[in-house]
Amino acid sequence: MLLHNKFKIESLGDSILRVTPNEDAELEVNDAIEMRSMLLKLSKGNKYCVLLDATKRFNVSSEARALIAGKEYSLDRIATAFVITSLANMLIGNFFIKVNKPYTATKIFSIEENAFDWLKEEVVKSNDRVV
Image (cartoon, rainbow, N blue to C red; front, top):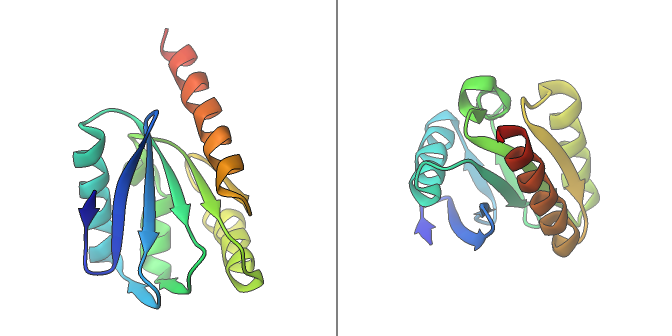
């Protein structure tokens, strides 16, 4: 597990990394850059999926959202699943998908197990494309 003052990142196995922002965290561009660096470190340079635990309140600046959704930031990312249980975060997650149009597949789930299963499928698909 890697800790940052605004979030933590841990490996769930199967090329899936969970990002958990701290309650009321305000994530800016420099935090997003550090997050990517930590994701690459934890994935040991391999392609990975992100399971974002978005069950707490937190904010991501518009500049950081644009960066996270972009192609360059996403080069090693296979897919992202948001786990969301509140209406407010659901609206923000849908806004991110519709407006920022993430470069990699991104879906919203209310149950972490379903998100994890979908990400495992995306890992298999990405491995099939490489062969």
